[in-house]
Image 1 (cartoon, rainbow, N blue to C red):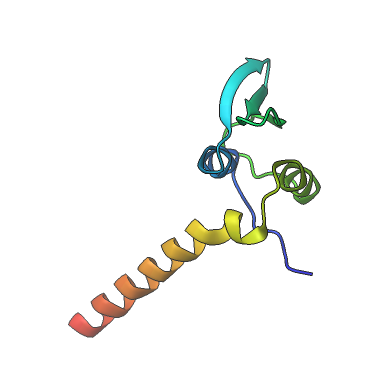
Image 2: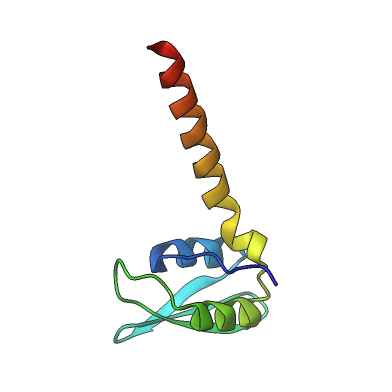
Length: 92
C-alpha cells in the first residue's frame, strides 16, 4: 500500500478545490466543502497543523481522491528545489 502524503490543512483545501469542491460554509473550526454532484466533505481547520493519516484517508475516500492527486504538487516542488540546488552548486 502506498504511504499517504503529509498534508497541511491549507494544502488539503487546494486539493479539494482543484477536484471541484467549493467552500460552502464554516461551523466553528470545521469547514464544509461541497462539489456540484452534492458530495459534502467536512474538514477540521486548525491553521498550520498536518492532517492525521486516518482523517486524510477518510477525506480521500469521500472525495474520491487518489494519493497522486494529493502528492502531485509536493513532487513538483521537490523537483524544482532539487534543480535549484543543482544549479547553484555548479555555479561555485
